[in-house]
Image (cartoon, rainbow, N blue to C red; front, side, top):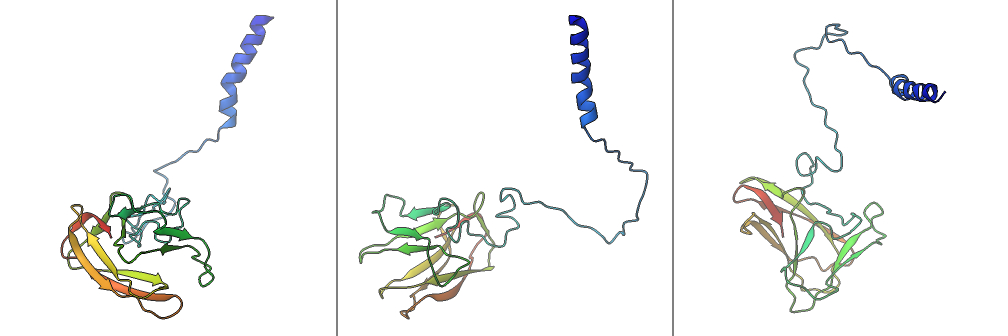
Amino acid sequence: MCKKIVLVFFLWCFLLPVFSQDIYTVSTKNIKAKIPSTLWGLFFEDINRGADGGLYGEMVENRSFDFPKPMTAWDEWPSQRLRDGIFVVTNQITSNDVNPKYLSVNLQPTDTVGLINTGFDEGMAFTKDLPYSLTLRYRQTMPGVHIRAILLNAMNRSLAEVSITPSNKNGWQEQQIHLVSKDNAAKGKLL
């Protein structure tokens, strides 16, 4: 009796996977439709931001501070420990429902600080003589702030630099700047 139970159990374990799987047969010799020679293409599925940095149009990672950790991809400059409270991500803004987060930069008159973003994967790729656009959306509460945007190569050498003085108008302002790279860089960053 014990041998029969073991034999039935063995057969059941063996046959169960056979009955539970679908079988697909592909016949490469059976042509269903003619494909024109002018038709070519590529299918690409972006899994876990796998395309970011290659096919993704934006080069700045976490440009809107929307990642679960809002400062992901951003490093403070200079790299030594800055005082607390200079950079604060705020998650409430009534003027833009689609993009509710923004970065507050709280400066004292002697502060010179910055943020570095290396983009996705191993860095931003810059091409010599190609212009790169950067849109800044800001609100200045006190006059006298100066902003510099710098494209750096892997050795932290400047490839392009633009300085702006933000508008003193009330409310949110938007300004687009263009940086033209002086050289190629495979692993660049934005300061």
